[in-house]
Image 1 (cartoon, rainbow, N blue to C red):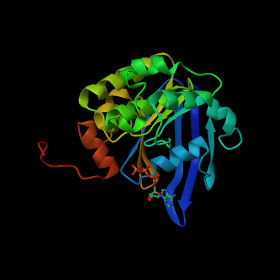
Image 2 (tube, rainbow, N blue to C red):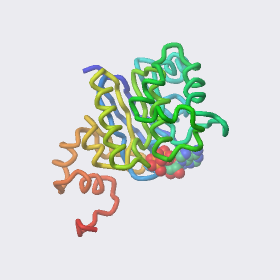
Image 3 (tube, helix red, strand yellow):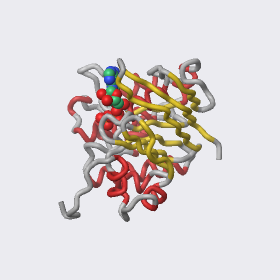
Length: 244
Ligand SMILES: Nc1ncnc2c1ncn2[C@@H]1O[C@H](COP(=O)(O)OP(=O)(O)OP(=O)(O)O)[C@@H](O)[C@H]1O
């Protein structure tokens, strides 16, 4: 299978603090890839380097067969990015924000269709700041999908969504994947990682400590449940009492 993202020996430090060290990863076309790790493990730094918005100290990156630093504009047309908090004017409606986003790209998807798909079309005329946390989270996924991207980066995918909304988002992503979209996500929820991700990469202090499938991660750990295995890899505390 062809690789849509290839990262080789990526390293990045901030004033002597090593954020990423010799990181290798690859993502195949049409798959869902999860970049996992505790807070500060280096996920955002990795994503920003892949998108060309941060310059690595060393390493090679290719995305959609492009160099993200040399072909930023071309890359921008083909990649969607969901931000945790987008910069938008205080007094802007959902429709206006979607239209502004649409105007930045050549080929776009009709945002009204996306709002409908995500169940927030009744909010089209509402102010963005008046949306609930979950509705805003859905809107940010919609914004990432407006450019009709070949690959979408979703940061902390369903943080803030209630149980039903999470399931709805998973279903939409599953459908988008079946239409060929590649999804690169970060998440702190291992149930959704297990459900959605074809491959994962677990980072610990800037280094890859596991790269493979969820099933492989579990088999190579002393645990039977993926969440326990993940905590073991990432060295977060594994509770002895499963009811805690
Ligand atoms: N602009 C910056 N200047 C200095 N240090 C930074 C900067 N950005 C990130 N770091 C540091 O680099 C390390 C990796 O941070 P990064 O944001 O990539 O982690 P993360 O895995 O995305 O974390 P989180 O899950 O909390 O978002 C952390 O120690 C962080 O404090």
